[in-house]
Image 1 (cartoon, one colour):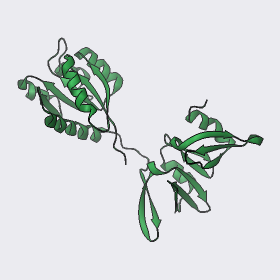
Image 2 (tube, rainbow, N blue to C red):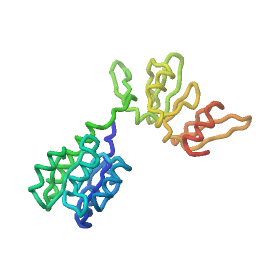
Image 3 (cartoon, rainbow, N blue to C red):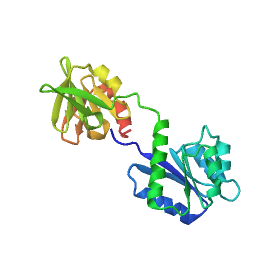
Length: 241
């Protein structure tokens, strides 16, 4: 399963301090900077609007402090927070309002990485768990093999079996198409026909054949029929309408 992208909000009234954190985050995989705020008022608005997974929050800022930000949002509603400040004496108060870590400026790369790891762990613990399967187990020559659903290009029906097509290989499982459709994330997979499910990102071209028939061509060149009943929804899903 691919690691979840961590969306981070940076709050600090000092430009150089914000840039320092941005530069360190740029080196980290699976991290996205959701935004930057320059004071407590802006921080409250951005937290409520963006719902970041993690916040780097300066304690001492003009007007509303970092502690004020947490108290305004509410400690229970606040995303996991790493406080940053030049004053170590604020550490106790920071942990009183549920900070996952506390960075005293100037901090080195190693200490930052340690804090980020704690922040990521806290964010992942709060993340909603997907109700959709991430892996499908198939039997191959007497052995069980685990296929990540992210690797499946498309699925077709074959009698009592469903066939998973993965990078040119085919794996058969005894599963109904309806059951598979319900197990797969509809944001990623779409049933284009009673006998075919495709991963939307694998679609290259929508085809309109003579006689009113429809099909899709995948990036590997495979062509699959699309039922007329599913055509309009498919076009909407891929942004063609």
